[in-house]
Amino acid sequence: MKKIIICLSVLLIIVVGCQKKEEKAMPTIKEEPEETYLFKDYYDLALEDVNKMTLEEKVGQLFIAKMVDSKAKQYVDNYHVGGFVLFNVDFRNKNKNQVINNIKRYQSYSSIPLMIAVDEEGGTVTRVSCYSNFHSKNIPSSQNLYQAGGLSLIEQVEKEKIQMLKELGINTNFAPVADVVTNSKAYMYKRSFGSDATKTSEYISRVVKIDVQEKLACSLKHFPGYGNNVDTHQGIAIDKRDYETFKNNDYLPFMAGINNDAPLVMMSHNIVTSIDDKLPASLSFNVHQELRDKLNFTGLIITDDLTMSAITKYVDPSKRSILAYTSGNDLIITGDINTDYTNLLQAFQNNSLDVKELDQRVQKILAFKYAYGIKKEV
Image: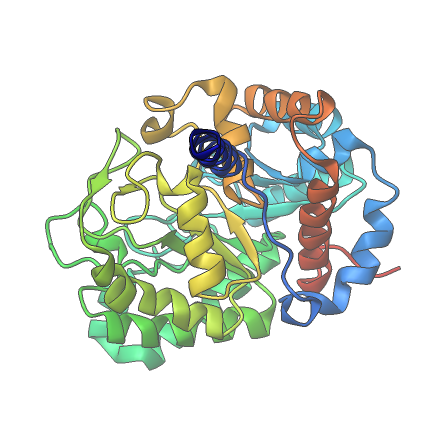
């Protein structure tokens, strides 16, 4: 009898252990109480839209595709994309009217209004202001603006930037950079506000307040903090800093932005070993849970581009969009919409993923679009 009890106990341990492993492999996003939703005022309206959508349309809303002007209509018709991200080529050798008309054309293709996004950080990363047809001069980096005139000048230039973008029909800016970078020679240093987390937090607070007030959707980046790591456009970056460093330093600017209702947070592609030593942050359920549970973020989480080398050299293309979704991203940026959309759609079609959860994410996306005037109430 004693042997039987021991055997049953061992079997129970094995079964429970297998269940835990399975739960970790296929996590689900817990539903926050409704009162905590950032876009809660528009959830009922968004749900009406979700109930009218096809599965193909729902999956498409998750994707922000890299703009290819000649394929814009195809991307909307075939993949039902939720938006486009524009780059320098979309502004080079063009005037304001041409860009305005191009964006109006993109919007005309879609029955659900599109997110039209750019990376207009200032300094080394500008897509629009680097051309004199759109701004008198390239908008300086946050560091340079601060040195020239403090936070008041940053606020003034932020308002100019918002006006410039909104006049063109751009409704989303993948900025500001909330990363704290201590090494002046590091890849992200010139794009960051600097090495002081407290000062960076104040900068983020000021900028996000203006963006939210003016209804230009902004995105804090790159969670959980880029640090002094190498360029993930070129390959894999492994961040071996201890967890306390993130908690007491890197998280602070993100918390400042979240406390001021930043609608979007972009994930880095760095492997942060103190949180998840296997997967890039953008594909890690553990890192996403840090953002949801520790920083109480209820807005939209978005990947950096899935076709960057840190992902393509690490994850099979057939799995990357599925991993991006199951880890907790609401929006997925990609330069390969055919591969990433098709594989994710198939995962829903073969019942590998739960459509009910998809409905919740699309509801949040549409509520965001209503909140920021991208989609209008009828």
